[in-house]
Image (cartoon, rainbow, N blue to C red; front, side, top):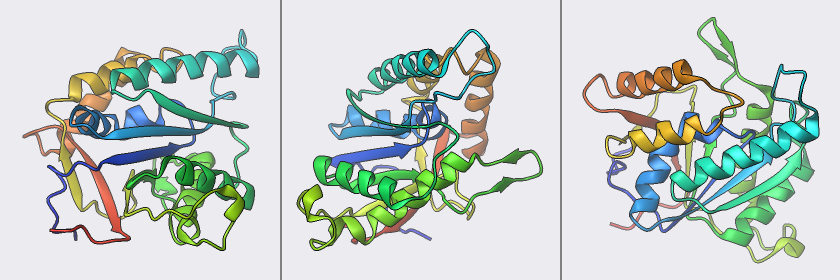
Length: 237
């Protein structure tokens, strides 16, 4: 278990890597907003644009992708994030390939984040009511593999830029017990407002449910977001 003061920790820079628009708002938007309010530069990397994410027959893959990119851009702005990289993989078809790993190495070497936030690649089943999306697992696997050791190895893909060392990987939606809880009392409203921007995906009941989850994670005392942290490089005291 981490003994660091993660609730007050603010990196100079961070990157959040997810599969779909709205993944960040469900998972870590409160923490991201807390960091950006304190001066951190945060970049979002969206592997897909959610171009398969609807049951509504009025949309095509192209039109739903355009809408969901607009929704994600609006949500990011509420959290203080202005830079988003859309990689345009096909929703529902993401696999943990060398191509994707290389694309993520390229993103990390370009933006040089101190911290990377990702999902836990080992999470498959949540109780008996949810199977983790295969895109989530594929993106998480490639993210972890890119973070260590590939992005820091100068002989690996030198054409993708200068080697960079990610110091910490924060995983949310983790299978193992979390070891870091971030108090998002001051940013919960922004997290909820960011989630509301994904009008093609969520309704008010879903937003209320996410608020309830945050309070439950904080044991009813304060709303929190939880993470498991891998320290690739120990923090300086």
